[in-house]
Length: 374
Image 1 (cartoon, rainbow, N blue to C red):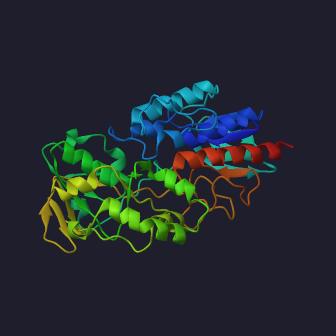
Image 2 (cartoon, one colour):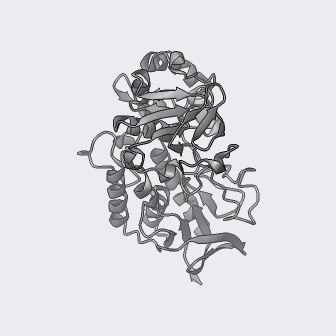
Image 3 (spheres, one colour):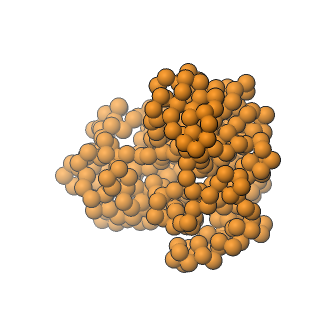
């Protein structure tokens, strides 16, 4: 059994940031990663993905992203950055080490893995969301003969080049995958079940994240009220496009529902010019397509489920109390929990940018972890 001052589960941005901050405080840290490299989730993302938050607000503690990079770095650049970050702070995760359970063992935590057991007084769960794809079920889906995949399995338009494609969901993945397909000349339709929130990636030439940070101390309702006119002007009317704007503002949607509004990077323009069609929710599947709730049946050779992720950490933490909600999501991220020495990082959506929030949480967790050693 190997022991350390702290164990971090996951070698993505949150795990690396926590490890770097703890190392700077002199803690002996072990990072456990089930894949064979850091940033495994970023390596799997679709090819065209770029950060939705600007470079200046997306660097992790102690190492900004290169100033020579574009304002919104590409997926490949983010992978390069995270590799460089691990090297900069001499972070050497234990790879191919899937964590099975984390249990209390006296005053410490015992982490059971595919490669043996590890113990430490501090454990940080930094697994991210992408290993928990949400795949809704519909009547007839089992009989559907076309390609049916989750957005986490999508890479580029090549597999869909000769098909009519339905993308289900209007979050950032759904909007950007539909745009990717449309730009490749694929016949693509978006299924949008209910009201949505859409934000421009920039407002008056300034990244939308900068506005969110400036208003972070305002109550969500107040920030949403102030921003609504400028956002409506920026995105333009959408009702004739088959879209309805939700009554709940984007800030409230993030904080109350943990839903991220669409940051528009060109999807609306392609809906307006007809390259991306919009339909309502799905009622059921047929052998070669879907029946929509409010429009006729249509054939589709492929359906991509951009239906998000629903992390459930209950199997990983079978004996903890008061730290997870009824769905297995942490009640708090980046803060102390009712279980001494147990922390979560980067597992709750932030209105001021996920990577920025990870940096804030990592510094705070490192301070709390250092206090646990005294």
